[in-house]
Image (cartoon, helix red, strand yellow):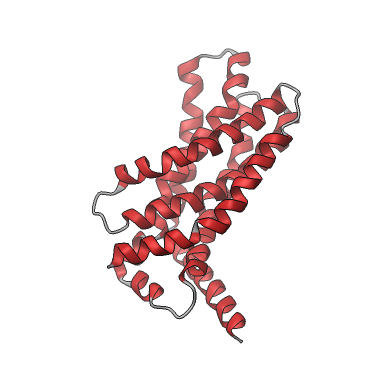
Amino acid sequence: MSKLSLSKAFTTLLQRDLLLVMRRRSEAINPVLFFIIVASLFPFGTGSDNELLQKIAPGIVWVGALLATMLSLDAIFRSDFEDGSLEQLMLSPHPASVLVLAKVIAHWLVTGLPLLIAAPFMALLYGLPSEAMPTLMISLLIGTPILSLVGSVGVALTVALRHGGVILSLLVLPLYVPVLIFGSGAVELAVDGFSPAANIYMLSAILALSLVLTPWPAAAALRLSLS
């Protein structure tokens, strides 16, 4: 019975967050627009050298996705903190870590999934070979949830701060570097005709660790921020 009630609480919270996003569609669109703008501006700065654009395409797409995710991280807990529902969430009889995971999944569905859909079109602008496109999609499919999971811990630590954006960036950016290296590196290997399996496996391992390890410190950080 407890499992059923926990499952219902998880799905209800997930549906609630998605419904709130649908009511504020402009906030959900901003990260994707930012990603498209960032990816579109680089050719103006680097020139029209097709070989150069193809070479930098993996890094540009991944950096754009990372920055777009960071732009939306604050939305995971901020609105709940401001209206007081976050405190009620922490007082729930259900494990706070599971409820935090529901909010992180909602964030990825709103931010990471649209980035995943937009990324191939941005990669085509740089002439990324079609052979490397599946690797790009797989790396983003594995990597963008890591960005949301790791970012949730930083947001939980800074949610009570009035201007916590700079601190949040300092907290999460160093942790994002391995994801950026393995994600863009996998696509670069695919472009060069090598197997990206090692990088994909490393991303998968980081995702598994993030799923297991981040909800608990995020929940603890929220309690600390609310105390």
